[in-house]
Image (cartoon, rainbow, N blue to C red):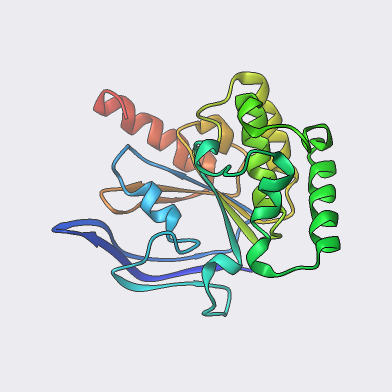
Length: 225
């Protein structure tokens, strides 16, 4: 299972956001770091087709199918992802387009809520959930579609320490490969690979013990990132 970027560029107006990126991503846990405005979020959105390349190709494994069939996306703010008033209804929403039998939909919802220890939230109103609960329900909404890969955009930014630790534990046990854009460098410390994006390109690519310290030093030299 892998994600391929073949000379991918993204241009908006006269501004080139990403330029000629070629990568093969096969690792289980990949972190993405970089300054604000470096192109990280655009890069992440290419994984499941939320962003389209101006040139080049993004491909999952050896298929040219719609990327959304393979890759789940979790937004930074769960309020951008949760659309229905009841938790159970919201989880079912992501399965409607798949025309699954009602029994299969119900079974998937029960299984995901149980796996995440969220069964007690099944009948709750989504607007009454805490920030941490919303984040976990948003993750459940991704997992219920059974993606083969998941990408996360700043998943811990809005979480307090307790909920951040819970999220990190869940992330560590997910069977799917995960790609995580984050300013939280501690979150990425145990990952298999880290990409540092700068000025629309791959500035550094390697294990976290090499890429993260170099990024910290660069930030210090620049007076902040």
